[in-house]
Image 1 (cartoon, rainbow, N blue to C red):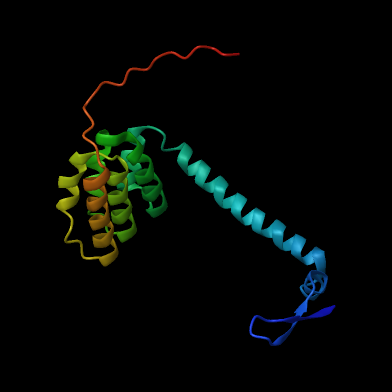
Image 2 (image 1 turned 180 degrees about the vertical axis):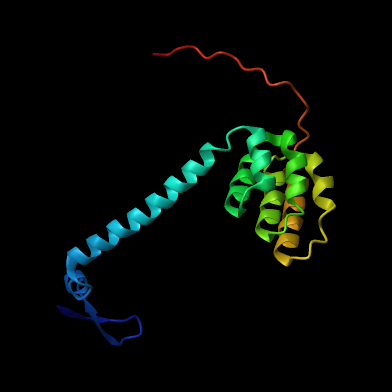
Amino acid sequence: MLQEEESPRGYSVSKKSDRVLSESLGGGETLGRFRKAIKKVFKSSDDKIERMLEGITSIQACRDAALTGDEEQRILAICRLGQYGVDAFESLEIALVDENWIVRALAAGMLAYTRRLDAIPILERYTNDNNDYVKDTIDYCLEWLKKYGKNIPERDLVLEPRENTV
């Protein structure tokens, strides 16, 4: 059903009610099918990503995938490498010369993600990248690290047992 409303400038505007709009789009049945299709698409890609991530759980697996995997695996591995901090610097620096500009930009971002000031000299060596997006990303990462980075001392990881709270 059409309803008349006045716009802020005084014009008369007809507005369809929600029910009329739903009916004009094919009713709830069509929207329901659309919703199911969208869920199926996103679920299948999430499953694929999960399967790929399962294979790159250790730092060595991440290093290998970052250097030799296909494009999607390299991207996922580089995202994981940022979690390993200074231990991943060598692999992230190698990724800064990857043929794919997305991989290079992501590697710069992961170096910044570590929040380590010792990532700055690595990034400074690649400020002349041939891709403007990568250059801008590296410049941003450098500024961000200079402002928010920390000198994190080297330390051995000591795992403390957790108490069983069950």
